[in-house]
Image (cartoon, rainbow, N blue to C red; front, side, top):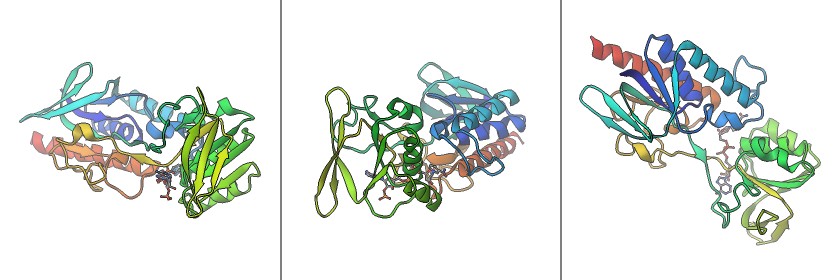
Length: 304
Ligand code: NAP
């Protein structure tokens, strides 16, 4: 019997694990893929207070080590279902089942798909959602990035260091990303700005050879000779497995506020998977702490 089972080993989940074990609780973290979550694919992190500069990989590695060394258990199993009982909850994974008294859902969010034809077919053959993972394959080549947020700007900057040309495609004139990143990208001579345009087709036989864009209003078509397209258009949640357990908002995020309390007693939601306006590394860590402390007070309350 675990005191706390945490679903997801991203920043929110691992922070919750650190707080949980430090409060003397038996904690299990269940993760479907790899620990670290979205930050693993960030080339650099410069806005986490107290750390001037660190790679996303190093950050995730440090977080995992800290949680594991303090005594949190981590298993790589996909959670399929959670069942509530009178005194405890049962978490079913693809391999096994575990019992616990509280659950923290920290499932994060996944990359949003562009929805253009052949996107899935060409994923891994030119289409990618992670510039830091796949960018190095395109050294000296022409590539494209689509999106207008911080991720797209960071990806374009990262790729501009070693790709010949980086086409930055965005559907509007204004960018959502930070001014500092925008200015740095504007200073790069090999970033070509394709704004107020949408990706309408992906060309190539076995691999991507060109990206077709269409300008809003004018309908002007361009065929960009890009061998890779890095899609950086934000994230969306994947909380379907928990839709019968906790209330989701209209966008599929778990309805929970700063206190991380969900519609179900003893089930908490932390990080990008819950309803919130700011989704940052710092807010994920803050949520992890809040959820673990909320779970601990729930546990003490029931123990009395
Ligand atoms: P984001 O801020 O949500 O931006 C997504 C971008 O993709 C927007 O520009 C949006 O266009 C565009 N977009 C969305 N759907 C699209 C579609 N179907 N077709 C074409 N374009 C589409 O996502 P993000 O850049 O991944 O950032 C997510 C969060 O992480 C943000 O809070 C961001 O600040 C944070 N982040 C921070 C850092 C950092 O601080 N170093 C780095 C990366 C990410 P519109 O603008 O027209 O809506």
